[in-house]
Image (cartoon, rainbow, N blue to C red; front, side, top):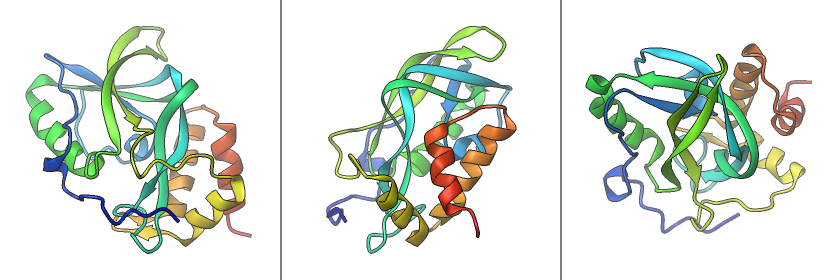
Length: 193
């Protein structure tokens, strides 16, 4: 297991999520798809090129602990990623960004960036994306399948079990008609008996 003892669990100590002017799109590829906890004007399936979804960040707060870290999704370089895009109203943005900072930016393991998204309706838009920081202590590089399964099975955090996080994300993608073969293989090994 990595040494994560030096992490600061305080969103105010880390970079904030970008807030573009006007209404803006936010790309969701993990738990934000099935549990956004914010209001939005519109929701569309979306695809991001240049990054893929991966269980590549250790979680010590929401889906694990310092003693038993879990693994959460991050956007990592290469490939493409299907997910969901939410259109957020400018008037709601400050409150939503503040809530997302406390949910997603608590350790600084993500950086936010504006990237091009292709919506399911064919429209191309710019959207805020949370990308894994490869130089962050929480970045879990090169974990093999079995190690990933063992970590996810053992981890439980403030927002619930790591196993349920993975299964809910996989189920959400399938309900939207999207495939992620790597995540589906992990979910298959986590599913009961």
